[in-house]
Amino acid sequence: MRICAISSFPPTRAGIADYGAHLAEHLARDPRVESVTVLADRGPGALTHEPAGRLDVRRVWRRDGAGTCRALLRAVQSVRPDVVWFNLGLTMFGTRLAAAAGGLVAPLCTSMMGYRTVVTLHELPALTNLPALGLRPGAHRFGLSLVPRLVLRADLVVVTLDHYRRYLMERHGASNVRHIAHGSYDEPEWADEPERASLRRRWRVCVGGVGPSTLSWPARITRAIQDSWPSAVYATG
Image (cartoon, rainbow, N blue to C red; front, side):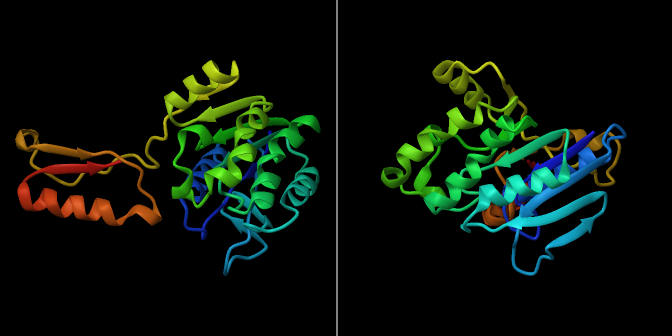
């Protein structure tokens, strides 16, 4: 099976880039997968075409650039994949309306071209703080309201929050939506500790979205935990 993944990709600093890289690398290790080609963004210092382990990374679009949809479709046709996977956030392709719309309409186009299309959708316009993403609700409201309808034309839509799944089912009658929790990128690593004595320690767990742009608040929480409970075992996820 040949997979074409469309996502922002490191060195781009964004949670979606990290998520896309991790999942693409995991898919590439699957013995059933012949190849994984990533159609990524052109970031500063990134090569246009580069092998990244088992991945073939082709940087074919630029955030807030023109012609994103056309560039993606041309690249998909050159890959000739069995499955096209879109790893989408509302502003992944940019905050300019034309650029964002050009990228977000691409899943509809690949479906119409006959490619089996899977979309991981990280935000829903109606349930997202749009100004926090750099979007103006008034100017972008109509265009963003079309996103669920366009994306739901894919064969499968994956959301990382269960209330997104419920919303799409209840408001749009969707039957092709699955909830897969975000989870952790790696297996937990345990420090060497006395065998059972450590179980008497207090646990403090901080749960939240952590990425390159949100590392300051976990650091502050960690310091507060260490100050208040020096013997605590803590985890951030």
